[in-house]
Length: 191
Image 1: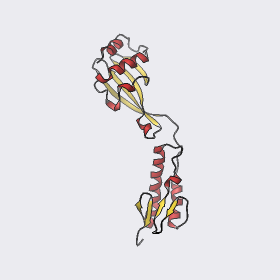
Image 2: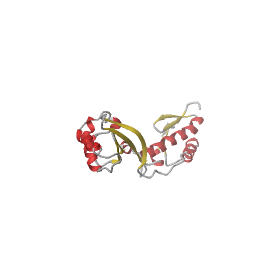
Image 3: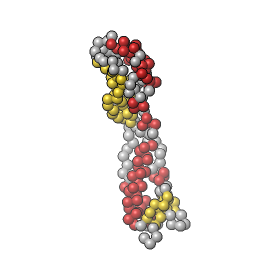
Image 4: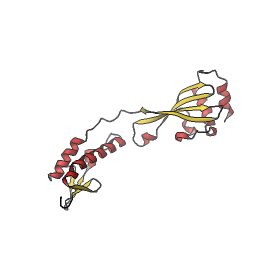
């Protein structure tokens, strides 16, 4: 371990007010030498300017840090990792995790209503702007017209589309329709 982190902290009283910038700098410098420091995808360059709740209770330095991996994939929540660094044992360990809501969640949508409307249009051979009919009897559901990406979050739209498909298929499969392609259905022969 970089002795400057250990020396700096060991010279402080338990629970002392910490100079966050100084501790983050020393912690980042020492990070690669700590056993367990690679846990949770953590890297030294992610420390400076991002720790929260730094506390010193010898020989343990603890802090939380917000990780943004989920937000890259469209989540509105970040993972908060609570780390404990033992400057004597030369270890770093994630001791707990929780989620932090970063943005307001999109409003909930009940997909059963739209699924019932589309199912009825398919079963009764009715026109609908969300359907594309083919001469061979196949019907494609233009799901993006029902649940566009717009301002909603990627995972939210994806979840809505998945729930919609399940609700639609629950109705039309009972009437002899089968999926023959992505969002494309056809009446089973003999049904």
